[in-house]
Length: 287
Image 1 (cartoon, rainbow, N blue to C red):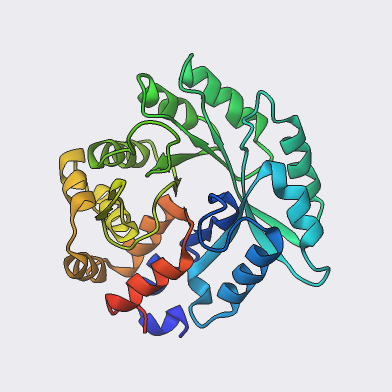
Image 2: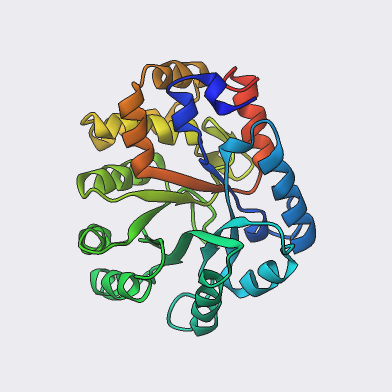
């Protein structure tokens, strides 16, 4: 069904919210890592009844050339690029981005890069934002001392922010307090953001690796932050396991507020579109 059939606010809150991150997932995850099968599955999702929910196909910069080569001549594609080599060693990735800009089949929706964990984060954030000024850039600020200064620096550039919600190669995933503080920090600085890592389910839950964030929780927390909620209240919303209560809360968001919420929370990358869709159906949001 079309998202328009859901009526406000979900037709706004869910539009192009879920980016397809299958190419960034480990090979043993669903759909594997082959570009052909991932591209075919992504196309099928975009053409499905719920297709308006699906955003860009996220791709590591190191595989962008292979992806565009596999794209049929008569097909267009929104792409979110993750600079997996960073900027220090990412010349090939930047060249691929420039080539993608010249490809009429391709629209770059997101270009994402992570700051190093050490050094002057604010200065590096400014450097990265300048290097990516031609692109719709999003800079991930690690949860280390200096992160607030880095957000301050980004607020003076054209770049946006990345909120990490899981998927760290080492150490625990960011908790509700960290994520809530980052969301509050982005709102305070008028920084739009996208989310990356582990955000596959609609509602917070626990699995064998520990608690995992939910994207309805993030939507509710963003809307609450815009209404003045402080980090402790945001952490409570992010920690909620009550899907029905989250849906009820989001249904109460007015149309203009929904637009502003999505103006800040732009999208998130998911390794499992099927899980996101199944959860929304189970909660009665999608039919």
